[in-house]
Image 1 (cartoon, rainbow, N blue to C red):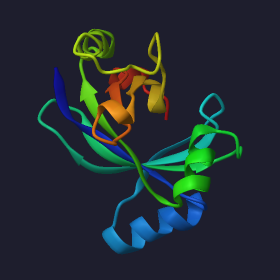
Image 2 (cartoon, helix red, strand yellow):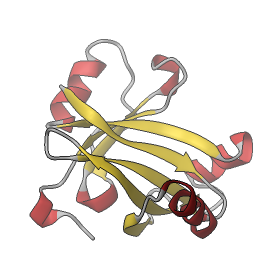
Image 3 (cartoon, rainbow, N blue to C red):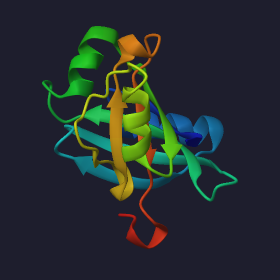
Length: 146
């Protein structure tokens, strides 16, 4: 089922300033940036390490591009900080169905496109002990958007 922690999503008000903090403090470098219009965010992925299954673990810094985006609403209510945790899986469709079968609400009927061409879905935080949880199937290396 789940193979690794894919990333920790961190909501921020100023992406460039937050990237600089993680670069100066921990030495993490940006390996990918994009604007996800559907999710209403500008994001930067900072690679933390590689993993045994060939994937990597990242920090995903998220700055809303619209106040009415999910991250924009979350920031208005909670301020900057950890927004979600994402677990890597070889098959987001099968694992979403498996968790749904255990009574956990899956927020999307069908997985959507996430960072670097991945396929994603989210699990309701009220069913995950208060933690917004994402399931991620990474795109094959040749198909990743950089």
